[in-house]
Length: 239
Image (cartoon, rainbow, N blue to C red; front, side, top):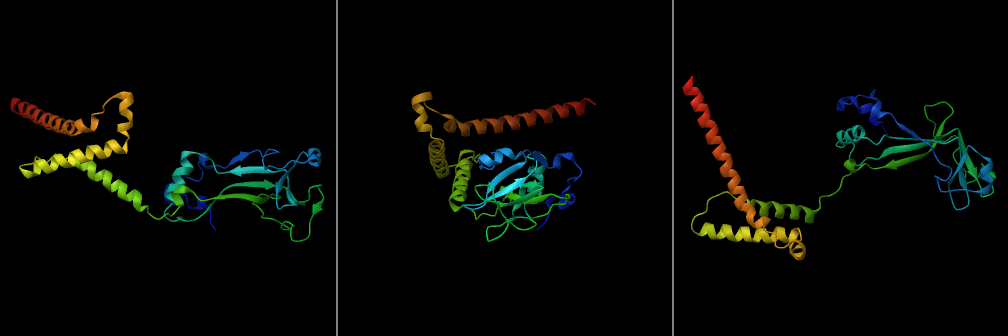
């Protein structure tokens, strides 16, 4: 048990920032999926299913949830290491009273199907919180690494390195480098489904031209650096 807002300051977040204030939302009469004829006379009552034959009656319900904004997302990410594998209450429904009823609206205060006598009290006087929404933020989840995905990423990196290899080969190295580039081109063509696009946009030569494009870029960068250095030398000698 804990409160993420109590741990905000160490992460650099200001708990007084209004962007972290909870969002209040109206709980519609049909919002919990239960509607019966006798409830039409009860303007401040909403039903939630409790069991097959009983329902939870909520008086003056009010929904409160965490705001869905970037600030809260960053806070959850900042707490992801310490709270990995934990769960978070993302929303609650507060009410002035709640109790069990049957399908005819008869109150059921006793027996195994009855609700807790006092419920979960909130800090607000006279308010109860019987229905929380609990979730596991994605950034808090601990999942074992996917070996298949890791292998795919490793293969992508190896083939990309083969395409952008700027090493000047000699002799047998040139043949080996050319073969690796050909394999890499086929790999990316299959990965992006380029063979299936030929009937629509013609032959795609991007990956075939990519190595030469990288070499041209490198030459341009070196040339630009040489010119820059030359201009600096001229300025220095002029002074």
